[in-house]
Length: 320
Length: 320
Image (cartoon, rainbow over all chains, first blue to last red; front, side, top):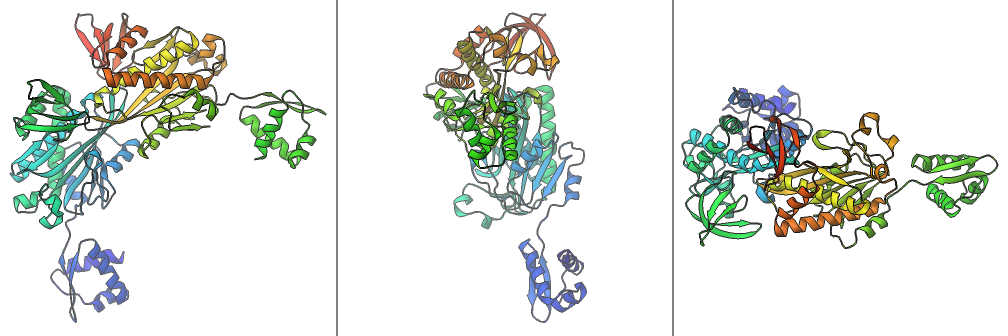
């Protein structure tokens, strides 16, 4: 409570110093309490300059997604019609899975400012610091066979790649099956988890993590060679609400195309954005390693690999 | 406590009357307490005859699965190596799903005497009265693409059908995709639920419900035309532990065959046991109704339907 009022005071007096005494009088709390509230705001990413005999001055506000901004960015889009915007969560994938089991609709969307246990593929951790990325999970309930789940992985990569290219103008490519790269470094991870009954999809949860406004120092050294952000590559801050809106609109457009006209359009788009096709690659699958030239997508969403002996092998999941 | 001792007294004196006074003296509890404990046993399916001046006589024991019997029946089988035998649960599918998320191994098995919210396909209720059926769920973690989940449905139908035929000698057939029938009535339901990541199976939970020793009066009238039990058809009680062991051994045998040699053997077994092939059927799928002659399984586990116009359509899930 006091803490909202305190923040409002600073927002009303931007650039000005407010003395501890003044604040304490206006809010009717002790000076120790003022100091505690300021520290709470600091934990949330607000920065204050403290000058003796002058008081405190707000010098930095964190980038916060506002519900209204997200809703505006999603206008005209069915996806996100059910929307949860969370300050923090262990993982948006877990949040939406619980929501799905409670009956959330097709298109339900969970966005978090921060994930404390964000997950990538194969159980790996996904770093999701507060306020700097788009960490979100979308619920899809398409009437499709389970065999199509791997196509949804490819479709999501196309949707995010197209949305980010159109917003940033950066040369973003898709590494099979679903990593997005700029100059060989990863800027987005996608994780599609499915729940099925017999041969049919019950629901899919599409997890999307985009490194938007992370700075170089946000990456540990071992990560900095493999990962980057839109801000680092584009030298500017990007509006996360706009990115969320653009990605959801692309997702909805491509899903409609898939359900109404089949997968070939999406396969073509994927191939055009791919940085994998035409290269000799090594794929680690659970059946072992395979080397070959990535030729094209096959009709079911697998990757056609021409092996050194000339034979074609189709791989559906693995690690390049 | 007292209640275990009380039961043991009756088991030690089968066919004899035990007076309330005698019991009360031996267990050191009041006669009212004796009466309460006897009622508790009655709730569990034990039946007593009460004759004044003689006392109580045990006249019926419920059929209870004993842990040791199940373990013995599973000897030589990897499946069931992690085993939970529950008195009652809402649903063995939910139990094993939670267990899977907590890290249960391939082959973990949950068996319940009774399910209070047993589920069949498409969210339907599955009647699972206490002590009369095999209600169980098996966890599988095969390294297979998600597209193979529908094959696991067919494989399970073959496994259960073969196990029950060999134990009962009854003419049991498979109705596509996975109902088991005797004389057109259902005696077993199978529900395979999958969790996947991208194109790959993370785990499958195979739910199997077999109506073993249900009596005619256990079926509501609207069910009695469509469902039956092994006891009704075979005119005898069957040992549920033996059935569990036989089904698990068949499952393990067929899974090994599938993983090592591919699906064609299992497809052949399925076709040989099918009561669907060669018949003109109507399939309700989410794309609408389709009429045609069921010709054979296709290589991916779908059913090939020859439509009246001569075209072949492959269906992966639906209702006949």
